[in-house]
Image (cartoon, rainbow, N blue to C red):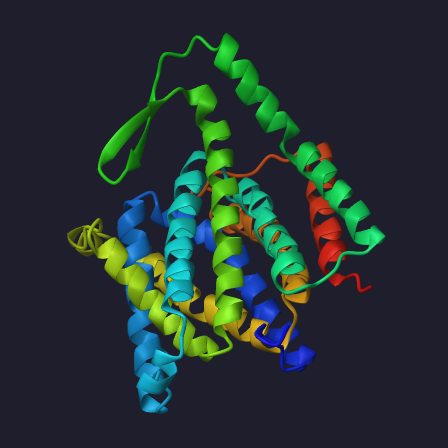
Amino acid sequence: MTNIHQTSGRWRLGLALSLVTVFLWGILPIALSVTLQKIDVYTITWFRFLIAFVLLAIYLGIYGNLPTLTRLRSTSWKLLAIATIFLASNYILFLQGLMLTSPSNAQVLIQLAPLFMGLGGLVIFREQYTLAQWIALGILSLGFILFFHEQLLQSFLGIYQSTNSSQIYLEFNGYQIIIHPAQKYLIGTGLIVLAAATWAIYALAQKQLLKSLSSANIMLLIYGGCTLLFSVFAKPKTILLLDAFHLGILFFCALNTLIAYGAFSEALEHWEASRVSAVLACTPIVTLLSLGFVSVIAPNLIASEQLTLVGILGAILVVISSVAIAWNKR
């Protein structure tokens, strides 16, 4: 199909850019968990997109690489709108889910995103799975079951057996939804799964947009669109009330958005979507190692993770099978 984006073939550059994305996305949930202690999800998301948009616009302006009118006219605005809306949805759903679960749980579960992207590549970009990849998909499912079995079991038992009358409030654009403590993990899990699905749709739309725009131009337009979307719900004044530490973490989250998504977008220019998703599958390893490091140097900053041997085995199976699914060639 001639109308489908083709990679440049510079796989080494694609690999390097994918590794940068893995590191930054691996430590991001920890930084977001700290920031969520002081500020709401909409303001965090708006600020991240705003800073990323401004810095990228300055960079492209200096080097004369801002999108031209000719390029913009040849761009599919429908596809761009899809990429923008679904990336914005991914950010909010992931943050809401992160509030109800832990960084390691969120990062393992979000591995459904590159899996969904890989499956989308089968349909849209005519990539193919081998028998070994389908077997790895089954192992991936087993890994998820092992990793989440204890938390899910406790959640189900808590719904029917818990006598705790305390309530948790989940905020959606100013509206508070009351949930039972035992339902907290289940709802958080559901939100992360939705976040994974929306991210996959964004990623596939963005890859096709590379036919008419550079990766930097695409991200500039998406950042700008997301900034406008969240400006309606954000509370900028709350940022001024942050202490120096939390303000620094918030800026890091914003820079993380710019650099990580820039690297990811550029990686898709040089490497197949399935190969990129294979490397991204290693992100939970970075998160788990980072959580261990943070728990040692700053034990009061974020709640420590208590993983069982079965849970660790499940995480390992998720990573290995995700890599096998995306890396295996026909």
